[in-house]
Each structure stands twice: as structure tokens, then as C-alpha cells.
Amino acid sequence: MTGLSDPSLVRLVGGVLVLLVVASGVGFVLSRRARTESARAAVANLNARIRAWWIMVAVFAIAVWTGGIGSIVLFALMSLLALREFVTLAPTHREDHRTLLWAFFAVTPLQYYLIGIRWYGLFAIMIPVYAFVLVAVSNVIAGRTDRFLERTATIHWGLMVCVYCVSHAPALLMLDIPGYRTNAKLLVFLVLVVQISDVLQYVFGKLFGKHPVAPVISPNKTWEGFGGGVLTASLVGTAIWWATPFTPVQAFALSVAITLAGFAGGLVMSAIKRDRGVKDYGALIAGHGGMLDRIDSLCFAAPVFFHLTRYYFTP
Amino acid sequence: MIAGLIASAARLVSGASVFYRDEPPDERQRVYFANHTSHLDFVVLWSALPGNVRQFVRPVAARDYWEKGALRRYLSEKVFRAILIDRGVGSVADARGTIDRLAAEMENRYSIIVFPEGTRGSGEEIAPFKSGLYHLCREKPGLELVPVWLDNMNRILPKGELLPVPMLSRVIFGRRMAMEHGEPKPAFLERARAAIRELRGL
Image 1: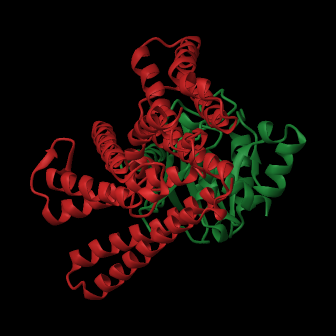
Image 2: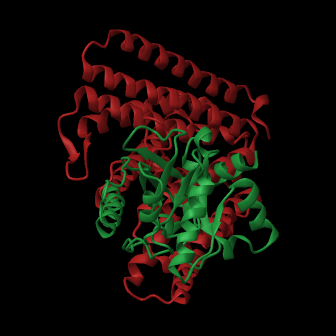
């Protein structure tokens, strides 16, 4: 099911490209106008982010256009990169080495393989049940008991967030929705709403932000940014209802669910970063931080969107 | 080309971000010395150097390990062009000979990578340095040393494990240093060790 034959997918991607051209244009104008040292630095960061967006959109578009397999491979790689960043920060011990090998080289590929063969039943429980048992047993075999629960829980939590949750995005390709084809558009819808929400929350926060939501966890997340971002991103989601199996009202409601879950995800991942005393999970994407910094909202939004869609729109 | 592939693979597995506290390394002759916790240490440090510098950098490695098997021998001879030395030499005369040979192999153009702790540690503490570094500096006065801190390698591939967990790591090149004229051995070795330890906190 390649997407080239689907005109609304072409229109979606075309729309994103127009958005990027506009963003790059604005970035260029701003860079000519910046006078002070700090303004120049801010604009340079903005332009680095926009350049990175071009690359991310290009990679994502290519993956989507190959149909199923490209998207599955892309999200599997994203999971591995996110897990790598997560584990690097997590206080694991040498005795956890074998368990981590299982997590990277067995559990993660298997989870995405299950999407490939469309085995929903095992996909939904493999990590919550079998990996849960595997991680604990593997850590027992390693034989270290101090902080056993903490180490075991940390590794399983990493698998849940970076692999299980993220895998629900390409899992959208598994859904059989009557009268709807090219599920890749659902994937684009999810990723677009999540990422636009991040961007708009940032923009509204910069412009109007006054009252922090959780000052201890993230001083940059304000109620003004949250409200403005959630509302406008949901309107963007509503505006592209024609690419989904939803009515405009349904598209709006699902967009609100996506953005709220995404916001929660961003806050939780920030809390972990504060706990470990770092600002970013990595430096993979120029201007954005690591993979986990870029997809923290997606981690929570993907399973919520997947299950809402599955519950209400599949027989 | 094989060297390039190995360097890319090492960068991929170790996810190393590289930091320089001085100007980035150039082709001048230097001794890169680092903490040692993993079999990956040498290849990651080597891959963190710019390609044009890498071809003038040779590792100093244990003969008994690197002469075992055709693959190791190929890698150490043809790819890394390692300077192989005998471990655990008993007499002072033998040790003397090792340093002489090392200095001769370096000529006036090759830099080397050494791990002065002598063996891999657990990663918690940096073990006291063996005296080879001191004797080499006496042999080649004015030789510049670059301390390097390798972060997280012991978690990526701990002692006794075969497969690496691809976590992220850091390679931090410190400021160049040299042995001062007439500096006593214990003071110099401790200063070199402290130079690595200091990078750890960054």
C-alpha cells in the first residue's frame, strides 16, 4: 500500500512542505534583522531547529511513502535511539548488562516485527507481560540484589516508554477501518498534530507565557503556551479531517486527546531529566536535543490515539 | 577503507560525542593517554580523532592478546599498525628495552595511544599509573601529552562481556601537558592521572 496513489496523502505532505518553506522564509528574514547578540543566538537556534525539521520531515515522508515497512523500520530505529538515551541516563549497573542486551536486540525488534506481521494480540501484551517477566528474571540470574526493584523497574519503564508506547504510532497501519484506506495518513495525522502542538506551545509560551504549569519541573511550560498550543494544534488537526476517517468534530476531539496526552508526556520526560540533572537526553538533532526530547510527547500520545481510534472506528 | 569502516562502526556503537578542551588534535606527535575500563576504549578514542590525524596514531597494545588468531593479527598489523609490547616484563632491563623500542617505533612522526593504568578497571576509580609514561617522556624530552577521559565505556562493554549495549558515551580531550624538566616520577605520574580525573567532572 504505497502512498503515492493517494491524493490526500500527497496533499498532506505538500502542506507540510509549504509550512516549512514559510518557516525557513521567516527564519531568513529574522536572521537579517537580528541586531543584538542574544537575538542573534535565539534566531540561530530557531534556524537550526527549522533545518532539522526539513531533515526530519524528509526522512518521515520517505518512510511513509514506502508504505508499511519503511514506517515500521523508521519507528523501530527511533525506539532504539530513544532507549539508548534513556538507558544512558538511567542508573543501571554492570550486572544489568545482559538484561539490556535483551531489551535492545530481542524485545525491541520483536515488538516491531509483530506490527509487520499484524499480530495485534501479542503486540498489545508482549512488553507489559512477557518483557516484564523477562527483565525481572534476567536481573535475578545476574545475581545482584541491591536496589533490585529500582533497577528492574527502570529498565522495564524504559521499554514501556521508548518501545511499547512509540510502537503504537506505526501500529496504526494495522487497523482495519471500514471504508478507509492508506492508514499512513493516520500516522501523519498523529505525528503532525503532536509536533505542531509542541511547536505552537513553544511559540505561545514565548509570546504570552507568564504562569508556569510546573515551575519545578519545567519553567518553560506555561499555562498560556499550553492553552494556545493545544487549541491551535487541535484546530490544525480539525482542518485536515479530510485525510482521516473522522468527521471534523471527531478530528477535533481526537486532536485534543493527542495534544493533552502529548503535553503530559513532555512533562513526565522533563521530570526524569531534572531527576538526572540534565537539560536534554542527547545531542542527536541540532537545536532539538536528543531523540527522546523530540518524541517525548509522541510517547504518551501514540497509545492514546491508537486505542481511541481502534475502539471507536474499527469493527 | 577498512579503517574508516571500523571507525564509523565504533562511533555508531559508542554514540560518542567528542569534546576538546584545547584546539582539536592535529598531526603533530603526541601521546594520548586515557582511563581504561573496556575493550572498546582504544578503538573509540582512535575513532574520535579526525581522519587525517588517525593515520599517524598508533596504539600501544599487549602482544599476547593481539597476536592470537588471524583476525587480531590482521587488525593490529594492517589496520591499527599497533606497537605490540610484552606485558608483565620482569626485569628492569626488559622494561628499558620496551621503552626504547616504543620510542624507536614512534620515530618523529607517530603519535601513540596508551592506557597507563596497565589494565582495565571497574570504572569507579582510576588506578595509579605505571611508570612507562614517565620513562618515555625522559627518552623523548619535550613530548606533548594529551589526557583523555572516556566516559561510560565500562557500561557499554564491561569487562568479561562479549556484546556491547549501545549506550551513549563521551570522549573528552583535555589540555596538552608535558613533563617538566627534572620533575620527579611520582609527582609527574600523579599530575597526569589528576589531569584525566579532572576531565571526568565536566
